[in-house]
Length: 296
Image (cartoon, rainbow, N blue to C red; front, side):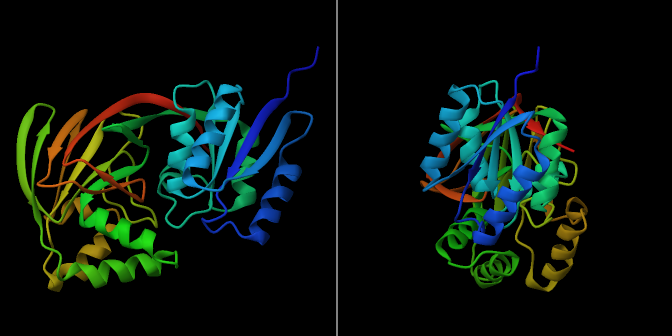
């Protein structure tokens, strides 16, 4: 009796840098590295963020074994929202700008290598995090972090230099805000440039905000970041890129299972790199080991 083939659906976001040449590389890699005696593969192209989620939910409802997010952290976020709570396994083909989750998990950015990884079938359970009625996998944040995500989404250019240009253009005039938080029942009030909730160690581009963050420890790292005087900014950027930001004196990290945060008005929140407008009161809680993902 032969084993049943594993069904694999690739959901491609054509907006996140997946151009024609990359589409053909993906198609060739799928046929070249996933043995059609073992895998039954299909590639679908999304038309919007909502469509990504819809395709993922349909696949999960149909008990597709592996659902592959081909895009950046925003695409991945929508794929996860569609499949969370199902028996399907997530896989990643990083094709976005920052690719924070893929970098954290050590998934190759090269398309052929990340397709090869799917064939190995090696997987682990990771945490996801609820944020009000939304959900994130890698990182969320309020304040300057969210403003940068908003400006980045409004621009036409992707990539690290566009991101860096927005940061340098907006930084000088941005005023820190007061955040009232309840972190695992303890009251914390801080003046901050931004507050990030890190399930992984980074924003993407290997800019490391929480060097010790683990994606399977049942905790989220609350990273409270003060505004750095411009004189010290180059040094702090260096620390971000060398996994030492927590030693700078400008960042406080508190690990928690549940956080409540109140702001003075409804504002944009950065959710896995995408700007989402949410109410002024935020509730964050970890869903431990709630998602199975293919890893090296």
